Amino acid sequence: MLSKKAKYGLQAIIFLAKEEKKKKGPIQIAELAKHEKIPKKFLEIILLEMRKHGILHSKMGVGGGYSLGKSADKISIGQIVRTLDGPLAEVSCVSKTAYHKCDECQNEKTCEIRKVMKQVRDSTARILDGTSLADVLKGKVNI
Image 1 (cartoon, rainbow, N blue to C red):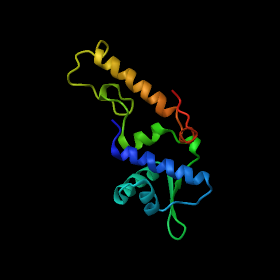
Image 2: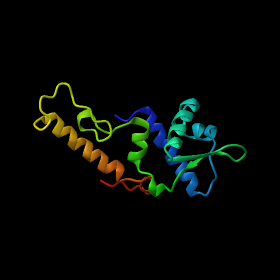
Image 3: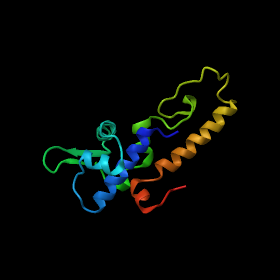
Image 4: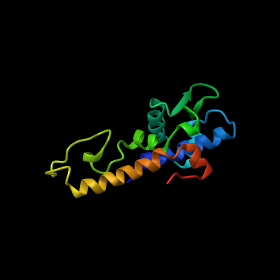
């Protein structure tokens, strides 16, 4: 399930991308929080995390705020979700970035649960990684 943190992060970055498309400069946290109805303190943590991963850029001082760190077509929804929520896999034994053998599993090669969860992970990754922020703005999802 998508966390509140990732959902707010997606809301925020979509808003920033729309504003950037209108040729507006960096957006201040207070404006973003008010417009998207996101608690300001929580939003600060989310934006900082995305900045650390190069998804966003920040500028301090007069005329400062947050903007996209790269073009919207270079930012995938999967990148945002992983940055804020961690691995996409529902179970650790199918994770590409945080693999850990399940204690309950006797044989990964024959585990039916693992097979299904791998398909779920692969399908989720294909959609999220194949959908850029620019695609979202155009209303186009790559299914």
